Image 1 (cartoon, protein in one colour):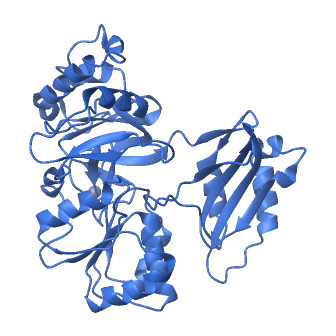
Image 2 (image 1 turned 60 degrees about the vertical axis):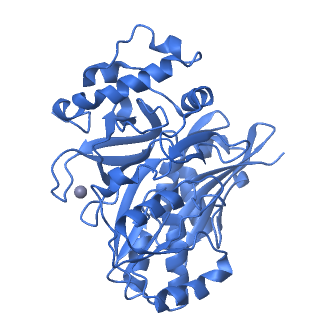
Image 3 (image 1 turned 90 degrees about the horizontal axis):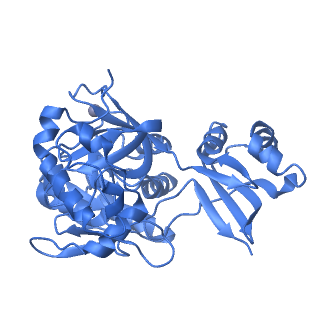
Length: 408
Ligand SMILES: [Zn+2]
């Protein structure tokens, strides 16, 4: 039988003390207490699976009430959720729980020269948690953060000169670095390790890395601002498969929706059956490491309403990215007074690739029921366009599959 928890009852149940304490904290939140009425304190994994799941908004409600504070050192505030408007806040202590990660995952060692290319500041956690990992590894750190488009070449020359052995960032940002290196004809022969976190791996990176740093291999972390790092992988694991940490309990619920309960007693966010919106399965990892690994299948909330019909954004992107010469696609939906006025797909194409954009547009339109129906009377409101850059979040460097624009 396929397991639905990442830990066996023997491994997990002695640690459910932390889950019980989290439930007690949640019961003090007036807006959340009623939903737990009638549920008993989790003594077993079955008890835990019977508790109602938490969503992002629930966690924000809980944190606004609880205002947790770290036992030792500073309590850091990080932005959790929406990238517009007032930040929703998550908390973490100095160290960002990376001791537990480092105990099981050591991509870096003392001999490494590590470029930390995750954006710093703006209340995003990735730069700081990877700095904490570097600290535990005892390596040399070059804290670069995010740089402007015209700065890549100079920095890359510096990296080559310093014989950089490792770099880390979101896959979207890493693509910028490797594409810039390819464009400049620059090699990083000493680079062995590419650390990543924040988005799914992008297969085009394999191609860029093979060109720029043929010795380099990818090392991934999976997590969120609310849960912090949940699992990690190595070059021997598929890019979508991660080994959960023993202090993070992963559960696969209905519709393969994943939820996370932290069993780390120092966790400040009350993460108890918390759903990030990601779907997944527990599988045996081909790397051979025993125990269930988590295969992440992507988000289940990628369906957006277009004129009353559900558009499966990830399916459309996958369809477009199968086209030879297209390396990445992004759906941009423009709304006017609450109604979708246009859908545009932005295309990043390989250099010199001949892509017949109009033919591809007609193919996608006819193959996608939602689009052909929604734009039956104004098919020109659906367009494909080649671009130099996709729309990315300035704060995190992430490039989402879907961008919503208000055109009114
Ligand atoms: Zn593995």
